[in-house]
Image (cartoon, rainbow, N blue to C red; front, side, top):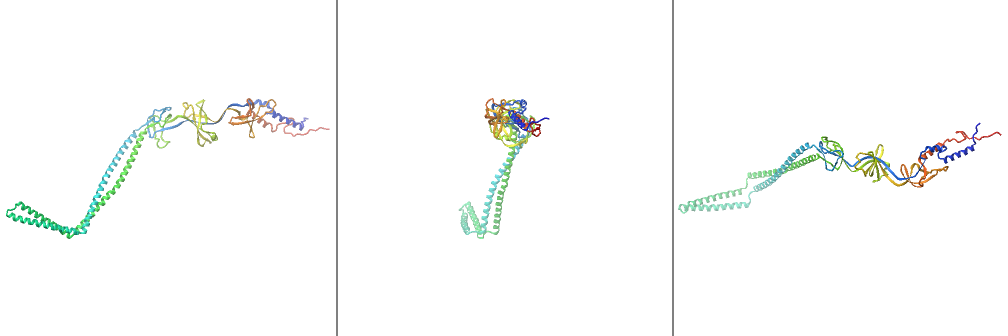
Length: 506
């Protein structure tokens, strides 16, 4: 019958097996495992260390403008081609202007007619205003005179007027008596042929005049004594009322001028509106000549001569593009980065750019701006950035695809170790050094600095040409350890059997 080793012997063998495992990190089959690993050891290298943020984007110009026309119509002249350079205010295109010319002429005719009507209304208003003012003054004077006459008639003759009338009668009576005596004396002398016939006729005429004056003075005096009759007073009253109506009519005419003033204002407003319409038509005529708004390169031509375009005046998105002008004095790259990298970015960081069109070249650029907001792109939070290309502006074209690496940090001549070779325990860092012969592999403490996704900067702990385990080797050790510990068979005992003590017969 087969016999098994004692429990004590088995324990000693197990301890020996564990010691062998730690001396040879690749377990009992260490030679075969080590042979399967291509790079078991590595050593530190000296190179430029960098931390970068990668992004992709599109090449753009400093600014791009879609050139449109403010008027629609047929493009009569357009000779520019894509790639042509134009200066600001150079001719881009001419639009058919025939309809607009007709509109301008019609507006000019309407405007002249409106201005003539306005001028005619102003002249008529000025004449009527002066005439009505004079009429008011005249009617007011007539009314005042009529009122005075009416008051005089209503009051009757005054004492001084009666005295004057009586004196005039007495004077006329004296003149008549004197002329009558002269006539009678001349008459006697005439019969005696002592005076001429002419003297006789003159004396007769003087007497007749004196008689008429006497009669007139007596009639006036009698009227003064009798006073004015009711019919005369009523007539004066009627004349006064008529004069008041004339005054009111003159005032009404002056008030009616306010309507004329409003009509003139309306005409002025009409002329102003028609002038605006005319000026707008002139602007449209001017806009049939399309000029370059900026200096730049024609990066896209949308229409050809003979094509029909729509006006772009109603909104930014409306209207037909004629050409697209791009200012190529500065080349930009519009890209975006993950929001987790935002805190690393600063303006003017150096950047390396690779273009699909120039795969063997690397162009230098710099980070010029960082966007103000984060947004979702394919469900990933990103932020926009802008890069300024520092070289190759004559070769790079708008629309090219660009891959960029923004250099966040750079350390020249840095001592570097691979990230997967560094072991971290309790906040400290180690590398597993190469073991010589049967000597156990040493865990060497090291001091590290910056790290990126591939390598870590070594500050101290290793010398040149010292070798340590690669990450691949460390992974193999971990896998071997995990496979060896659970249920590893022990020499001299089948797996799953309990240990027993052996005994003999006496």
